[in-house]
Length: 462
Image (cartoon, rainbow, N blue to C red; front, side, top):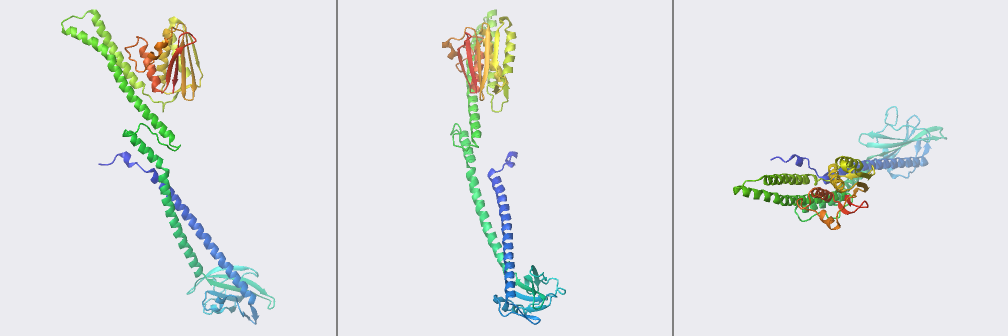
């Protein structure tokens, strides 16, 4: 059986970060190694050239003309006297003819005549030094330095040349490269291991979050209660809110089923009694038929109302777009003015254009419509509604100049779960919808006396 498509697309965040940082680390260490290797090689070559320059100065200091040749009684470097020592000295004239060669170069097969060997050391100007490389069979790579001088006694220019084998320098560079790669390899391995450990430590809060979510799924916890980094706080807060919404939804469904069962008891009892009379052979008169039709209609209304509550009350605010409150209140007031045209109500709406509701527009329409409908129904001549905002919380106030609600009835009217069939016809259903909507949005509702003389409903949503 092939795995689901989602399983094929799964990947590890830790693996991605480890590979990304690992590649970056290897590139950085590789480039750093190349830079260090190049810098070390250049420093070694510069030191070798400086050493050759010093050897030339030593030869110039002890050189004495001897006819057509030169005599060098003593030098500071003993390798000039050792055959095939790897350090060789020459003195040539301006035409490239050899005038002196160190004992170490007796077996060196080297022609310093530029016309015969283009790779021979060049003749520089007086007081100048030239450097170069020369490869000889059997001798390998040689590095040379050529210095031009002028002897007044002989009124002639001479060229002092020192050559040294590059083998020791190459061996030194290779040893440095070997040590460099060894240490950089060990450093890269150490940093990769340290990086893996740091990634595990840094991503541990995500693992803790996954464990806490699993604990919630298994019923061991009710919500996320751990201490999380600030980057995860919005996630955990929203998860807790979703969990709370889900539990409230389940609780509402259970309550609605109870409400539905309780609300249907009376109509079913009436219908059952009527059926018992029919079984007894009695004929139903007009009043009994009217009662049965009324109870059937009432059952239909109860079922429709409970289904509406189940669908509309359970809406979440998390992804809802903000709704402008003032235009919505104006529309409701305009519609109710037409419905209650005979009352000629004086209305007042106080809501700034910036006041918004973060939720479903239909929910706000249902809530305001029910409360304002009661205000128009029981108000004598005036109805006022105002709205303002505190952060994301919407504050609504609806007032009328009607008889109001007695203080001992206010708590009962707003009691959550009040049965639709236990309240006076015409107001219970609407207030039940309002209470459910306010509860669904985590708000509160309060009833007190209005300065207008009637009831004042104060509602906070959020």
